[in-house]
Image (tube, rainbow, N blue to C red; front, side, top):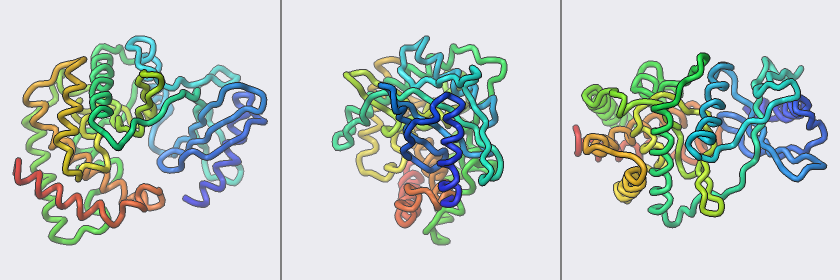
Length: 326
């Protein structure tokens, strides 16, 4: 991954020529799943963000589908999202190769949108904002006519914690002993049974952001903006509730945070008692998927930071979950 990072900056420079930005200055923003660069043209008043996609995760149609929903959300539902900028050839996705990098990479240039992540010292108000914007997005997704090329990920049981999990097996998460593994296995079995009963009716299952946490919410002059649709796809709507507390599911005040999320959601949409009752099932499933992510992404800064604590905390979370539902 470190070698790839050294090679990706020259590839980013090549990619910028597809937009006529050969002389722009590149600054690394993040290097985890995808690689993101801030692009500052030397003679322009606005900046851009270049995303270099990791290989073998999304097809071209998958990326096109993400960009289409993001565009429709802004046009139809008033949800401000970063819009993709067409290249000189009119295409939103540019496939670029570099002689020192094996294979090609798909690249997208986005407009840079202003905003700041909400203050995490007081999470109640930001969680209300997250709930409200999630409800707007879910309502739009229910009615949105998918393009003929539509193709996105499916965040169901099998692809989160089951045999086809995108991020690998939760069993490979770091720092979990045998007893802890047994506890997590019991939680997985309970999750599967409860989701089977919960079902996938259209009022519960559809198009979701799938990573709508505070890091992907920007606030600017009172307006709520949503970024990073890379994982958007089909799942239960309550999966978005779980992603709101990604990496902090072990906090003692998560029930209070989820109550704030639900309050915000109800300002725009509706939630049934069954939806609310199942939130912890989705929190636990998301937690285990992230445990797998940490195990399979050891090179990512977040994974390195959490490797020692996330496994034991996940076992504690599973014990609490089973005390409620097991």
